[in-house]
Amino acid sequence: RTAEYWPDDLFDEGVTFYFTPSYSTKLDGRPTTIALTGIYTTKSGVDFSELSESFQQGLEPSTKEGSYSVGFQFSHLLHVDPANPRKGWGVHLKGAVSDGNPNYVQSSIIAGLGGTGLFKGRELDSFGVGYFYYNLSDELENAISTEEEAYRDEQGAEVYYSFAVTPWFFVTGDLEYIAPPRKSLENAFIAGLRANI
Image (cartoon, rainbow, N blue to C red; front, side, top):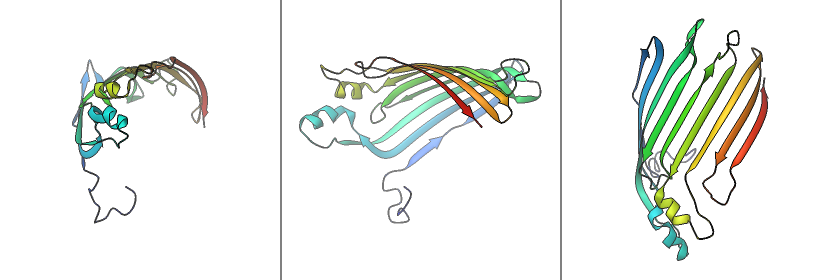
């Protein structure tokens, strides 16, 4: 909250604890990082298990106190910039699981290949190829799905390349493909071009 929280209302909405140990090492002589994340909050959220019944009765949805999420991250450079050993390009992986209620993402995986300097002499350029999969809460999907509108997990992919025209001027091309959670919506294909100065 941005105002009127001290001291009377401090922690009235709940407390969130975030824990993330990480370990940096080298595999095959290249930088590698492994990290774990743990999140727990006492904050209340919508209870998806009773959401459908609440709507049918015209009531405000009931809430559920407390939620958690645990995750794992891994990154490893496959190519290291000779001029800067902390830069290069490589693989990145992130996975997480949660309680699925009141968290609306029950589990997820994000994977990609990317970084800087894909081509020799183009060390300022950056690129990325990525994929994500969000396993939405089963209880939420069951609560909001109807005969007319069904829901599913969401997934998508993206590829981009950022070309350094100068050290301060970048032109980036981007392609995205998204399969949305609402089954009635068509999958989306998005192409973009942007400039950063």
